[in-house]
Length: 71
Image 1: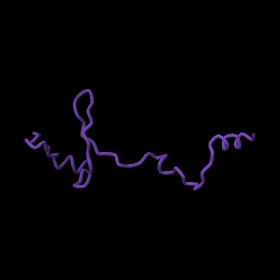
Image 2: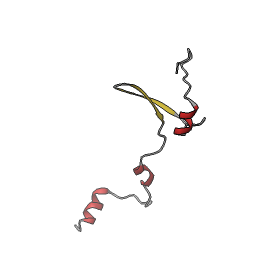
Image 3: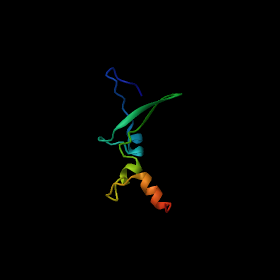
Image 4: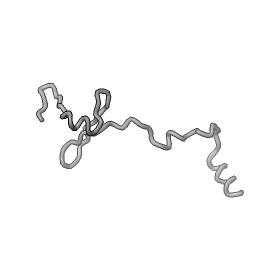
């Protein structure tokens, strides 16, 4: 593959199909010791962020720990 003078690179069709790289998929270049790695951009949230606030109540963590410990 060659990079164009505008900086674009064409990923071969077989690789796009194999790795699910469709028209709306965001990718990123990640530098490492050997050069650059092209990978699918992770847009998801951290699993903890998905459950934060699920109980719908706000509590003081220190008081909660004391309560759990039976103090």
